[in-house]
Length: 310
Image (cartoon, rainbow, N blue to C red; front, side, top):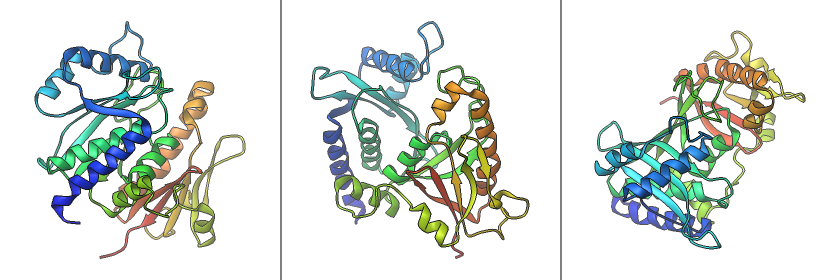
């Protein structure tokens, strides 16, 4: 596809995702709209009114005035028609003229299926219109639904592991837990992204569930970490001393809980044990330049493969 055709194709994907989610995505243009968006983000992150907000209207005003990405998604159907149900904020990053960093995207629970998907594909089309080729963001690698969304729904890839990236946070999802993150790198014109877009449009027969773990294990993949019957971590042989080094297995599988957020609420100590164990397994694998995460299965497994030598 020629460079000139990328934005047009990207907008067709974005419009399809918005129609499917029954939302209209448009810029947050006024201070009143920005204030509503801030309240929405506080609600998503479970921040009570008396506490410090996740973002402030004055900050959004400055970012928007400087030309950064600042949008809201409004429902187009049903009794809540016109309601703001999602907001997203991104700013330009480095390399200048190439990259944009998506700082925060929040969707109100109960807003319907596919709203977050619509926002991200809109973000991609907007960035391509400006000649950008990459969007980055950080996410919690212990949240399976986010991992599946980022890697399979969008075609992004994690590249680096950051220990306690934001430091202590007092919002609902992060309170009392280290804020470990990985960065998501979304190459907007990559084959991975194009395949994800084709799946959204129904133009691809590739599985929407991601890698087939049983087939990978049958082909020799080694389990580095798995979820036990009691919800505890089960280290695999790939995490024993010496086997996670570059001479280890070509394909490693890392299993995580289906819903770590529920575990945090019910058993914070178990959630912390999971945090530390995943850190011990995934951080060195991402730091090893000879390996890359190539997918995430809906059943809750990262697939880490050796990079092809060039």
